[in-house]
Image (cartoon, rainbow, N blue to C red; front, side):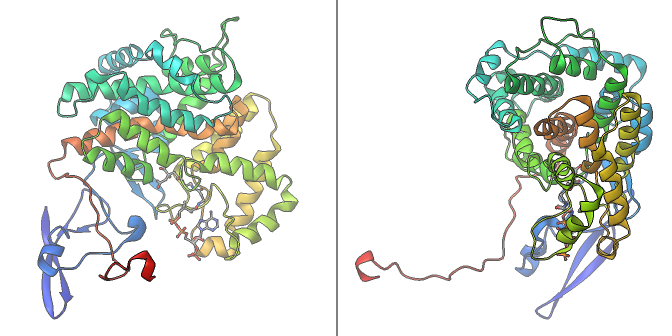
Length: 428
Ligand code: SDX
């Protein structure tokens, strides 16, 4: 709805643009008619000031460090909810009743297996392939196996595809890990929780009974909740853009996985742990802080900074608490955690980080916990993708159902050559 207008003065002409307000957060200037009315585009590389859609799923207040999923604060969900329940909340908009949660849990559990031919599909990869490369390929291939849920105009097929993606990501993630270490795949065990099932498929072997450790199960489930959704981040925007052309949901999620892999985005958790290990002892921290501040050095503190948060990422707080709990309960002392805490303390007192409002983000502490649970660092972004699939699927469904959505097709500021005539090679 619009109850005020903005006026743009351009080439001596005033153009009135509606200003729209949401339920909370910044207003938006509706520029949909700007080009038709003025012949000009807006210019916003990286979309720092651009709202791409209406959404009711996640709200972030970057100045205050607030993250709400369907209105519920992330720290309450992380503390009191479960990943399966958060998946239901993101998809359907409300916390489920006990019966709704039981029915949703049953439905998801009935989609945990993958087509047996998909196991053969893995055989084409080298054993040392990065698990994210495998995830991109295998998830994209799902559309070659599940043709009966690729018609995006059919709400029933959209929901089946959504359930399949949420249910099969843990199975595929575990298969990617098993394949990389040369161990056999384990089938899902639907007597276990969503997260317990994933831990067993990842760390269990056919030769022995695997007992799910409740401490690790709770920590992993909380980590999944913290990664479930995050408004219109790069990978979610990729899923929406792919979906806007009518591409099938499996292809859209594969596109999101590819985007998430970048070290500036979901790949930062792997990069952050590798950086903390490279720093090694706290006395090396000043050298890395200096490099992070050096304009001529491409090095950045991985796990620090955020496009939206100009305050502490609320997920990082929960992640740090969880890291402390897990290491204490497992009786593990990891010097990397000490280095991370020391690095955070030094950076947060440094004028450069204060002035640029750079704080730890969700990726800064996650590697410490994932390493303690037993994951190699090249699996960290796979775990991020597993959890974010719930958010991607919820956002994709919201986009498909949005009457205002159409194929995404940005324009540009053209700075290339103006028209010129072809010159045959003999005359050049
Ligand atoms: C995720 O969008 C999301 O919601 C993402 C995410 C999600 O849940 O989906 O939250 C997950 O991707 C978290 C971010 C993970 N990435 C990293 O930790 C990589 C390190 N961080 C940076 O690359 C950076 O902070 C970004 C990419 C996260 C944000 O970059 P922006 O918003 O484009 O900001 P910028 O690069 O313009 O930085 C502003 C200034 C720059 O200095 P100036 O050019 O103004 O002098 O801050 C500096 C940057 O050089 N800066 C850093 C820094 N991050 C920004 N300097 C040192 N170390 C850093 N980490």
